[in-house]
View (cartoon, rainbow, N blue to C red):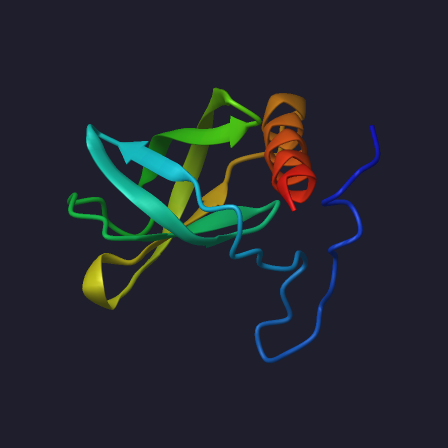
Length: 117
């Protein structure tokens, strides 16, 4: 399978981010039973919108991430660290590590989105 996310590395802009943020596809996120959606994501973390839980910066968190591939819903569990709390329920998390199942999840969801077009 071709890699759809591999070529999205950049370190431009004021943030000097290693990986480019992707707004789509949007993923459903569950943290401590609270559901929210991603505002954007990269291979190193997620920006979540509509988060109503009480996690604080520096805390480790387990995340269930849901996505779709064709007509099948996929799920991956991710260990992350809260790096920022923002206005309007925004929560930024960084993955503890990018494991093969996480990478495969993003690849399959991104490929399914391209196939729909």
